[in-house]
Length: 270
Image 1 (tube, rainbow, N blue to C red):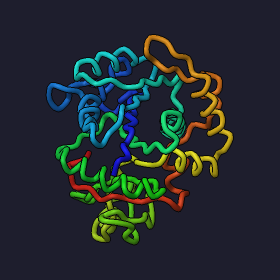
Image 2 (image 1 turned 90 degrees about the vertical axis):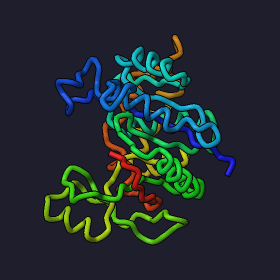
Image 3 (image 1 turned 180 degrees about the vertical axis):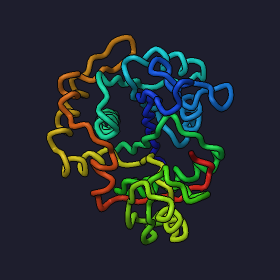
Image 4 (image 1 turned 90 degrees about the horizontal axis):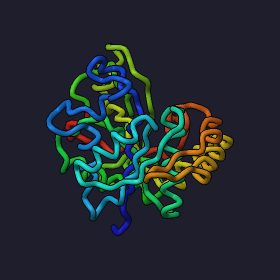
């Protein structure tokens, strides 16, 4: 398959759950918590295979722009860096990345990844991306479901439905973080942890988002079209981006679309 995946790395969060190690001025995704590199750097290196992945897009808070450039330089990777003038949750951020990717290529396939996750088996991760690319190229919005190691209460869950292709399943059901009893029942029933990372055709993601909130998609598109460009950064137009409704991508798209698919992964993703 000649189609390449455009990685969209989400690294604008404040990382408050790891306070005091992670602080607003230097959040956890930029810290070397598991070795000599930050999880942001490890995430970029994980999607650096040139035969599969295209030039990445990084979307971050304006306050972190120089940390992003510094850490990109340390690992020798170049990226398009988009700056959010304010945080609007994952829905508008991913939509802005999708619009930017679509401007690069009308048939863009985007892989939206959180910058603070850890993956222990990179080869298995890349194999899962290849499976996801097949489904995304067929018009699916693909999420990655981690095979659970225990009945965890800190994750949402996904119930896999019918097989689409290879190991890719349609999503039968998304469920929120459960209590301990429900978590055990979900694990016994073959549910997967929801990793919160997605692959999708940019056009499909935006079309599905419009069905829920067309006004926000329009104003996000305007924020990209009228973005400022200076010192290598792309700064979303503040008034337009600020007008978008703050909402997670799960509520904006994933829990409502009929195009959701899931790739089961067992690559030590957390």
